[in-house]
Image (tube, rainbow, N blue to C red; front, side, top):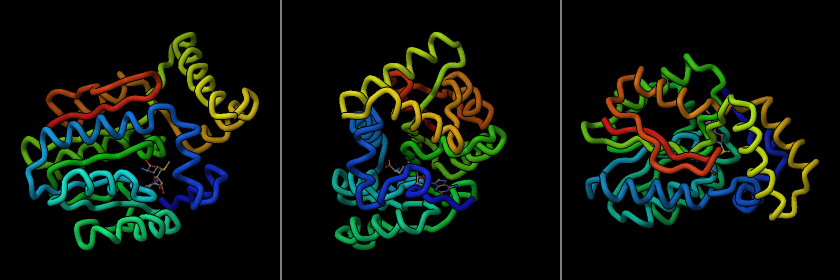
Amino acid sequence: MAHSVSAHLHVKIADYDGFIRTVIPGYDTMRAVQLDLLGRSLPPDGRVLDLGGGTGALAAAVAERFPTVHIEIWDTDPAMLTVARERCAVFGTRVSLVARSFVEPLPACDAVVACIALHHVKDLTMKGGIYKNILAALRPGGLFANADTAMSTVPFVRDAAFQAWGNFMGTQGIADEPARQYFAEWAKEDYYPPLATELRLLAAAGFAEPECFWRHAPFTVFGGVR
Ligand SMILES: C[S@@+](CC[C@H](N)C(=O)[O-])C[C@H]1O[C@@H](n2cnc3c(N)ncnc32)[C@H](O)[C@@H]1O
């Protein structure tokens, strides 16, 4: 499953970190939620997988906050991994990069995180398989915390969420029409299942207590503990 972020988002990879904050409300808030959860669950020598880790921003934040843990970034876009490699070089062998799809079986770990990456999986059977792989990789007590978009299928709830999203983009200088164009463009590759669907998939994968850790619709941090 090859993926080019530059083609998908129409952005130069060097501009990605700035761009993403203009189109994703709560990008930094979701990261803070994930870091807080990791702080409550990770052992000092923990091992964290960052699925679709992109330019390495989340991995770097984890490495900075928890100076003795190891983080593995999985991503399929070589251009994103190049930026991640440069950014994370400062952490030496504590951050490693794996050019592999997150649909593959995952190595044993203490936590799995992802940020606006798993919405690239449109097939729910495949997504359920990823959740099963995540559960299988986690040690007992290990955390899965996914920061992503979860969109209701109820029309007026969905409209409200898209409107709130568009309003945020307006505050970043992106007018209504370009915002609508972004949504239409991203929909070609992305799928934002309702939160209830995500929680059901997690339960079906074997998570005993799927959880929504934080939500400002449509942006959500959800997952579970093994
Ligand atoms: C929107 S970016 C998010 C990057 C980063 N997690 C962040 O928060 O900024 C989505 C990332 O998922 C990666 N990706 C998409 N499909 C993937 C797959 N099947 N396996 C691994 N990574 C994938 C893309 O290459 C991209 O880097």
